[in-house]
Image (cartoon, rainbow, N blue to C red; front, side, top):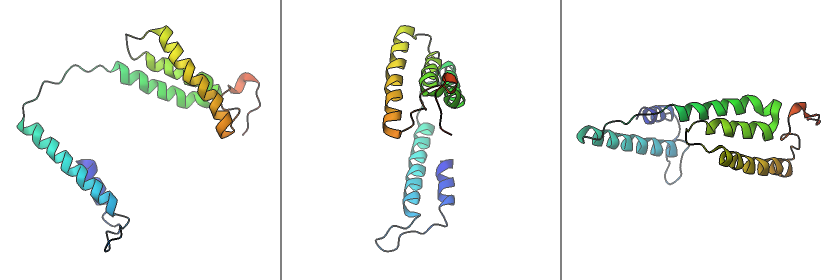
Amino acid sequence: MGVAAFSLWACSDLQSMHGFSFGAGTAPRIFATLLFGLGSAVMIVGVINEGPQVAHYSWRGPLFVSLALVFFALAIRPLGLAVSGLVSFLISALGSHETRWGEALIVGVWPDSRLCGAIPLYFGAADAAVPSFSGAVRAG
């Protein structure tokens, strides 16, 4: 509801509808009003009804996925897409104690290899998939 209230305030100086034509602020006002209404409905239902207790929450999954994203962001330039994509996938697989590493490696290698072939083909970035220390000439 706070996001909806902020959105309503932020679009307050935008134009509204003029006749049948939408102004720049019409759609944001509609969506913010709907968000505020749905948030109010959820809040009312939560206050009226007794729900189940909050279950135990594990931080392992979100922690390793966040670490994988940070690793990918820091490693994409020096290591290239092939290495950083696969390693970040395997880091995120550490988020579950039920991970089967053979299957995780197969699932990580298959889309990684497809991307390393598609990026140069469709975007013309032939050097994006290889590490910068591999001897390949990198643009820029």
